[in-house]
Image 1 (cartoon, rainbow, N blue to C red):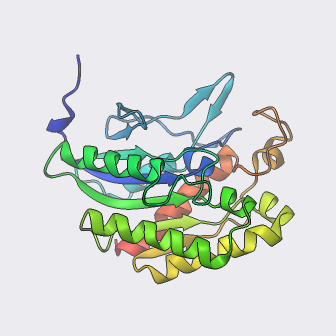
Image 2: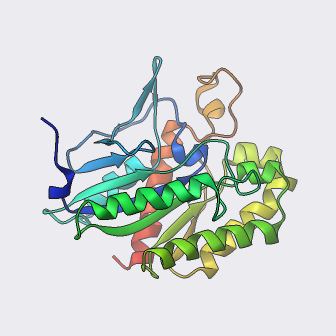
Length: 254
């Protein structure tokens, strides 16, 4: 039987950016995410499905919104009469400088439409968090600090203004250190810009990623078929989601 999602009241989490937000974490996890009928995805094709890890071949592939959601429920942030809807807006290998996330670009406009769709399901639905991880593509394009800062600040301000949520918590994070340290000259301006946007935008926080390993470091094999130093492993993804949630809780005053 088809579910009528207009009958549900959702807390809405926007998950946007590129591949580390989309989720490319492989390998073991101590306590894997267990799907629940309280946590749902709005996918990029505008279908609604129960939130779950992805199976890719013989591998389980994860993203940081799932452990974030688990912490959100465990902390009692979700009232009993509500459910959680994660908007899966991220797309791998995308940035500002390749014309995907600026205000007239396709992924930004799709994200706005996904937010409108989610809010339109029920008048009691509400935006509660904006989770962002992006910047590797712009680093590869040798973005300057000023360019990346201005693009990212414009993005979060525009979302808050568009949906009249001036205090919407905005959480972003550092890159995988394995890849960043191998590309430190191009990464430093972008990471510094992200950190400063989180500081300056109000109701923002920056997640440090020290100690979080890449897929290659964690597995010493290549589930994607190439030496993957740029993506957080599944174990790291779980920790990253918890770090994002703790910063969200501090930012939201919970």
